[in-house]
Image (tube, rainbow, N blue to C red):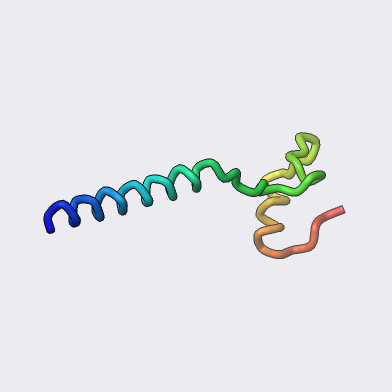
Length: 60
């Protein structure tokens, strides 16, 4: 009976380890879409950032 419990415990640990390895091999989806990369030419002033947070329309 004790051997059966040990075998079951080893099988459970092995299957959990296999799931972890399989999850780590899977590549995550990109968090950005092509064309929306960082644009270094787009620079807002602190006033423009605060106006955007307040929901005000941009100044021309």
